[in-house]
Length: 425
Image (tube, rainbow, N blue to C red; front, side, top):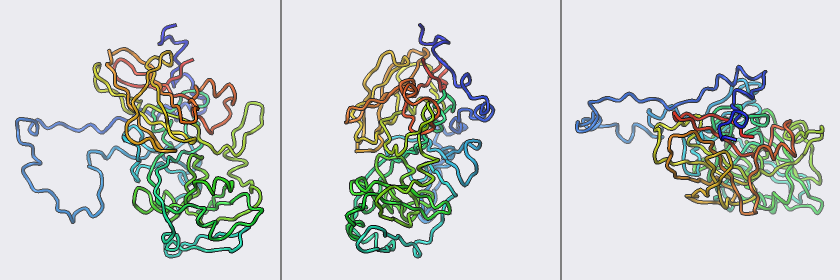
């Protein structure tokens, strides 16, 4: 069967659910802002900007991107969630490189809008099955032993709209609920040791300070392992949309556990079965049963360039394919790339740091002959886990879930350089 046989390649439009077809069709690929070329600025002429003085250092006390990069930003999907306050915006993965996400581009997920806390009034309560209940100020937390760790943060619903078939035409929308930053904070075990744990202590309740009072149950074993109480991201204090002044960082686990605007930690002997771990953030299986406490984010990858929002501007020749991979199990060990929809795989080059539970950047360089390609990437982590196909996931999980979809993504590269979200089968 030909790689472009219509029975094998299913376009995004062919598999849209009827109720969402109108909204999804509006998500056309977003091309970069086209700069108007001024011939007078081209060599051998002397460009305008070399003929005048620029602004002084005091003009920009906080740096901003160039005005020519104004198209780079988080975007939402208006019909995807109930309201702007309980919604999500997506990281523009196709517009950034490396492994660290700039603070202003980290995806947002809120259940009651952005809480604006006064850091002077901030308090963190620690109580329950402890020897000594405690209340910490922000200054108290900053005085404790600190660490710096880079971790990815991924919403469990990332790629969730793709369970039933190719739908959203852009990696910003299919995979953009993930970011990776360098967190500065205090290991949670430091606070727990300060309070002292009772013998029956087994679980923690994490409660946020937003009006949704976002709460999740956290196993004590994880809390004593690598969980952080973070107050900085990439050197700066947390941004309000990322939990200023204090949030929880739960490496490798779904972002819903990473409670923002943290106000309370209660120690108990069993999980609390809150809304976010009963009616939400469970995985509905084919037979009606649901998986619960599916915290781990398995190995996953996506090609960011070329992709629907980042088409190729050349028609053939040397091409650099770029993407990201990550795993909640640990480091990414290898990434393979396919140009023919999974028939043949080639090992990509991992470049930059390959940290534990962090985004990893990969590249694959090849000579494009201008023919249509089916681009895929497949991640493998240090535990030996291999990223599955969507068909393999559906075999065991069905199509009811909207969480924990780490299936292989396919982009169809057309002869004109445009790219489309498709599935192969």
